[in-house]
Image (cartoon, rainbow, N blue to C red; front, side, top):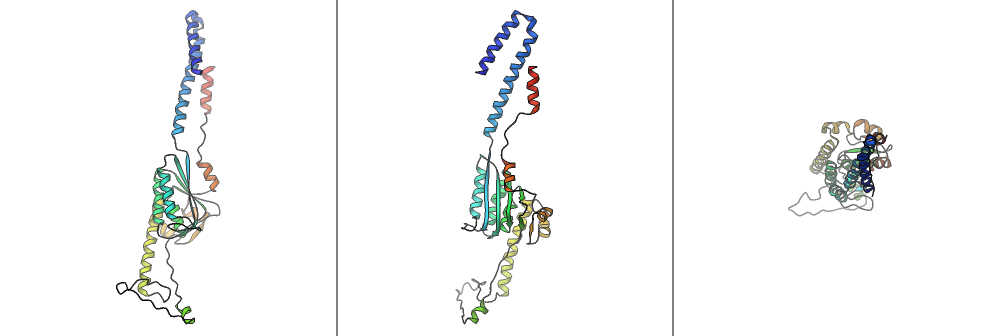
Amino acid sequence: MANDNRAELRQIVAQITSIDPVVATDLAAIANGLSAIDVREAQLATAATSVAAQPSKIALIGVYGALTPRGSWYGSSLTGIAELASRAESDPDVASAIVDVDSPGGTVAATMEAASAIASLASKKPVVAVVNTLAASAAYWIASQASEIVMTPSADVGSIGAMIMHQDISEMLKQWGIDITIIRSSQSPLKNESHPFAPLSDDAHAFLQSRADSAGADFIKAVALGRKVTQSKVRDEFGQGRVFGTREALARGMADRSATLGQVISEMLPKPATRSNASRRRSTLAFE
């Protein structure tokens, strides 16, 4: 409708100009103003189409409690974390992701896969891991793969490394008068060598140590890649298994900044487009 009115006005201006050339100069300003409106509306239409086509969703991926491959009532599923990250990566409507972390860690099994999925997502879209309020062990491994790690003011991060625990209850059983006899298939004399009914043998201890060292090396390598630092820095300066609060963690480079989850969400929400002062001035000048 507005375009039709402007077309009619142009016809009137053209007629008046042909009748009285004296007013042609003043009327030219009106014509220029109409042209400026047409250009501005075309720009706005293009911008609106572009905005509509741009992704605007923020994916929220929770990493909570004791992490296990399939999850439980007391912790998130590592497999589920990987699936959520993969879905966010492939969803064209998702512009970015927040990994909300509050976990003491979990199993070695499936942690590498979950962390790799977060790293893949971060290679395509911005990913912010918010430590809210604990990212220890496996949870820090996962968080370290994000584009950025943000810690709440009272948060803790760290516990890099792997650990295997063995409990020897043989003396307690002896006091109770209980003897345990283990019979293994002859082909598998080392089966369940870390059982709790006898002291751990030197050979079994060495084997478990090698497993822990291997997992710990994978952990350090992944953190170094995610944080874009050397493995030696992670090994020497990221606590060697200790956990640090926000101030110390930031000083060591284990995280990037401090903010709450709400603040991070507000920062990542799409901002409505506004006309600049310069644009308003140009529009005004066109009609003066």
